[in-house]
Image (cartoon, rainbow, N blue to C red):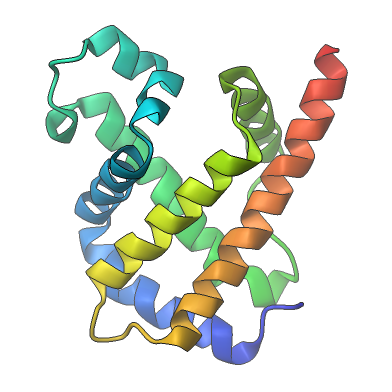
Length: 160
């Protein structure tokens, strides 16, 4: 299924509303991931180094990472229809694939991230949230996840 003009409009409109507060929303996105799957914290070396008692909300590396991931996902989503596929620089996609393989990311992790992303966007723009908007963000995320998974396969076979 392609990304329709209507889906693009919904994603663009919601991203425009979220963008001014993207740092705060990005951190909420990662906190939601850890709420759904607490064990996911162990996949981030900078969180393991911080220790169990360090508050996630004020962890500078987590916030920076969250912003990078959230903004990349949203910016990629806004370009889907125009470009016809996920637009993340090839080098970035390759690095994402290798990093995710090294961290032991599996399909179930992508589902947790998807749920957290949708929950976070719904909470960020509740007045805009509709089943159609949810579907638009699901499609955008699924396409980004598929591109990362493809790079993961390449990275895994290169290191095998």
